[in-house]
Length: 108
Image 1: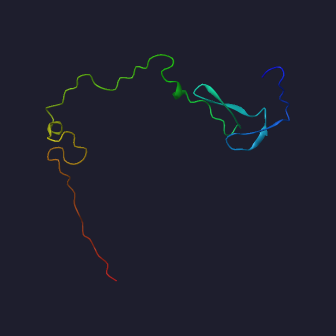
Image 2: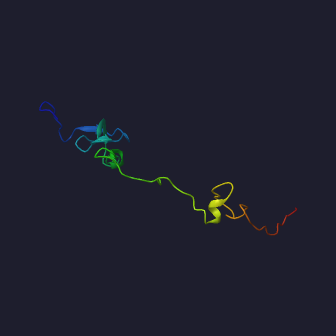
């Protein structure tokens, strides 16, 4: 705030998120990705800047997830199937096994 601006305690402002009126000194600046957006929010609507938006700014992220030069497990039946990975069913035959009970039809 410059020296030519004033904010008396009775000045009213409107929340840019919910639209309700609050005292101007209660409204807080909305910051997104460490940059002010120019919007003001009331204490109920104001949300702190998410720290996940700053990933990679402090330095490189070392988060290895993939294996380098992977090899299949040839000693297990599930890894040697013709179709590759079988998400459901029997890993040896590849078929789903289930049972069906009695079905009763009510005729009126």
